[in-house]
View 1 (cartoon, one colour):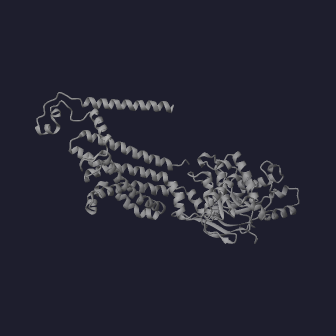
View 2 (cartoon, chains in turn brown, cyan; view 1 turned 180 degrees about the vertical axis):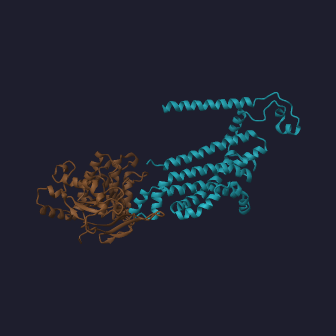
View 3 (cartoon, helix red, strand yellow; view 1 turned 90 degrees about the vertical axis):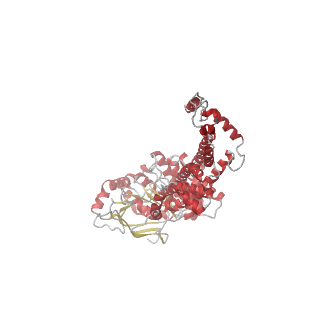
Length: 314
Length: 280
């Protein structure tokens, strides 16, 4: 476990009591780790504190207890090491798309001149397929384009980790599909470590290496960690043809429909919040021997080479 | 549709203006009235008016002719009590400008502080609430006594009346900057000063300029009254002086000019407002 890039230990959030009422523990005993280059999705019902966890990782919120250690250092506040894509795109409407990205670039490298900053901004706009929209104001862009600018802005600072708070929640299904595809492509090219909140089970299976399932709040915890054993080069056109797809999907839906609630009421006797059970529902149906697949799954995230990273960065 | 409506509106405006001028003309036509008893008054007004043949209120033609005469030579100086309308307006505008700029220099930074710090907001709120409803002219005697200069006193009065809308609007605009934008700045580790100028200021700019526009409107209302009180120069003094001269023609002329300048000021701030407004 020493290879862990991000370690979350015993995270807990308590909201102070309104007069005369007991205080509210949204979640507690949250333990999980991420390795470099891993894409982790967190799934759970509203009110289980997903956004709070993400905000703690971003440094925008503080936990009541527990620590988050990223790259050997404790997270104690916001930092350029972590790029955030907000739920509502959070673009500044008085700036053009380019200027919105440039604002982030300028924050990361204050010593850069305007030309260099704009060049980096344009490169990242191109990366999300908005090469020609640099001079447009957010009000002139569609919802999907705005979210793309938000993604470009987050990538432009070359963060060690990317945090996505339900970034596609407000988009229509078609746009969502396209942007998911783009995100997969960029993440694979840059080997970006990503932590993402989603409500969409299919989105989680498409994008994530690991899916954290949260039980219902209050006192929510990570009930299970589902390892996505589908090959990483999956696309949304072919994914549902893989025999592993439906077992994983059914497992996730079952959890959200019934087990998230029953878990909160009565967790299994052998449940240890410090090491939530890792499950591989895809392997049940897969024809490949489980041993090989597991070895593959464990080897996957390590395949980060410097040459690949430089490719899209400068 | 809007084009034909524009035309219709312009025609209607012209018609209303024509009716108004016509009514004014008819109301001020010479009448064969009674002879005035008071000879002093008759002397003052001229024999025709006193005799009732001519109205004491000037008609539109007289006002228009006078307006033409005044506007042809707006910058003449014939002694301290007889100066062109351009000079009088310039005095007033300079005072309004000075008071307004001083007020903006105090109100906008202070508004930022109040908007960003709930503590300072709560601490200053009672003072603001008490000072805000005071008529700016009520400060005049105190200003005259302490400053001992009538021109500076009227600038001070303008300062006092322009500060509140700008202060309150700035504080409100700064306090209601969207949390998302501030979070973006936070995650990008943007320093306080850069955040103030590149995030909060543009975000609050439409609200701040609205405050400036209101302040300017009030300042232009107050300067007339202030100059009537302190005298010497300015459009307010001009009105009062012409009343003392019993030149209603000039009084009406001044009223029209005050309206036009006020409209232009408001128009300028409207443009500024449009410039900083963003579509979300």
